[in-house]
Length: 379
Image 1 (cartoon, helix red, strand yellow):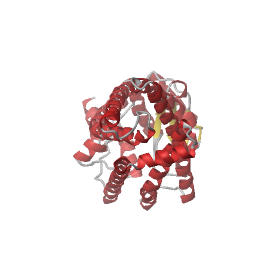
Image 2 (spheres, rainbow, N blue to C red):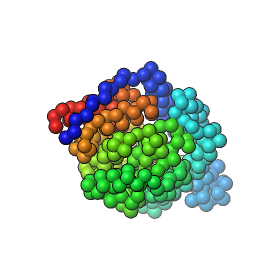
Image 3 (spheres, one colour):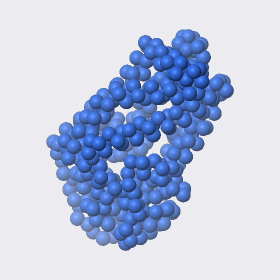
Image 4 (cartoon, helix red, strand yellow):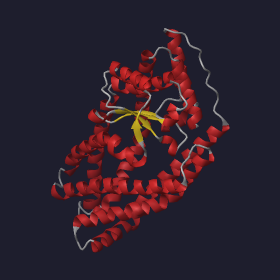
């Protein structure tokens, strides 16, 4: 194996610390506002008032009333969260991480709201149709249906959802494309294309991904990555992504999520029955005014499981890193790409232990580069 110069990991700058600390506070504020909205809707009975308003507007058409209720709920949530979202937009500019103009950002927000409304409406309509028709076993059928929808969305995302917000075009660098395809074939992955992702129109950050499932699996490389990283560094970044395929992390993650989702639907059913039969909070199971309660159950469960799921994700990321070390000629490009990504994206290389444990789905960059150095020395 070729020798390489080990690039030291520099300490996090004060700017990086401040930026990430503010982002964590924004995330916490967003969570508290969302959680608080759900509690207020349930505690005050305002969710019932919204239901009545939706039913009057829909002339007693149940499914149209569900749509109007979802529309009002999303609109209220968007209005309440708008100050945080705008501050987050300004934050990216303050730290020189964004190229996006206000009009473009506002248009993306509108598109995101419309897309979210379409997806949420489909999900909620299906959910309450199942509750009405199979009140005893709705949660089990819903779990199977939602699992199928999750896989379908993963397949459609690269060809339907991502292009709504970003431009993509086939990569013109034939030599780099050839290297990445060869690397993919060695990993046993069939790639349907390598695409240039025009991220620079909105952000100065860099990124790359192996997206899609089956016929839609493709490599996407941000132009901010292509312009500032060597072919060796880009190959190292992709080798890590391919490590997830080799170790079947996508399939394993789907199975883990399937188990959690099954428990979540069962728990939602139990909580909903308690609210209807014991507390008389709602007249029937199919009263869509109970939607905030179902969302609240999902929110609490996700919050409680977050540390464990992040720990599992970090384990997978370490496995993918090791595959990368084994697949490239030298770990030097991996180390340099990690350091450059941290600098370009203002990521913390050495977050505090509790921040990493609670919030990070990836190991700290300092730990990842140290693992690369240790691997190089032992091989």
